[in-house]
Image 1 (spheres, helix red, strand yellow):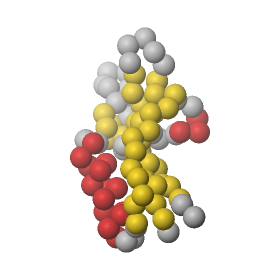
Image 2 (cartoon, one colour; image 1 turned 90 degrees about the horizontal axis):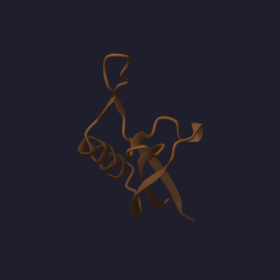
Image 3 (cartoon, one colour; image 1 turned 90 degrees about the vertical axis):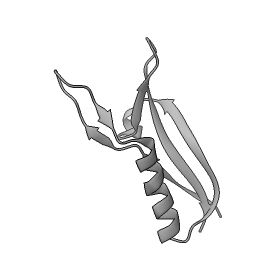
Image 4 (cartoon, one colour; image 1 turned 45 degrees about the horizontal axis):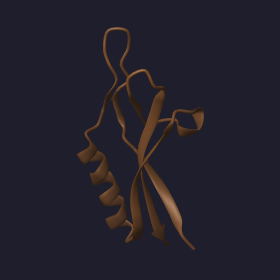
Length: 82
């Protein structure tokens, strides 16, 4: 059996009318991933960066915009064997 866990890049500041949304550095996100792997003695099969169109089902994921295209959500997915 294999499983996966997603790690969204955390929002540091939600932004507003006069400020932009800011996110944690990617290094901090990867540190959370590595800590989870180490603390839980996970046997990692694969790690991938997932980028998918924005929807309510991906709430909290890092939103990336490319020019006039719609918002995209980016997160890290760790595939592992329990």
